[in-house]
Length: 93
Image (cartoon, rainbow, N blue to C red; front, side, top):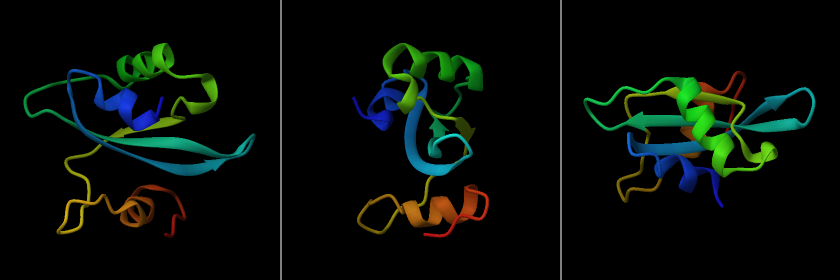
């Protein structure tokens, strides 16, 4: 199952984008940028536990960051290059 599909399946999550981030052990690991449904609260550890229940270890995000919105093109396509540039240390498209 896809990482984004699992996270968007959480009842408090509105939107999610997953990008690769540097990992010393594996080279790259998933980082999830998550938008919550307005009025909902969720702890990072609670969402991490959710992903651990539904994903193998190698697909579980190394990091989860709550963000107010995700960048999208006028057609609605997620702009992962912009996500990397904004949230991944040293991240370039």
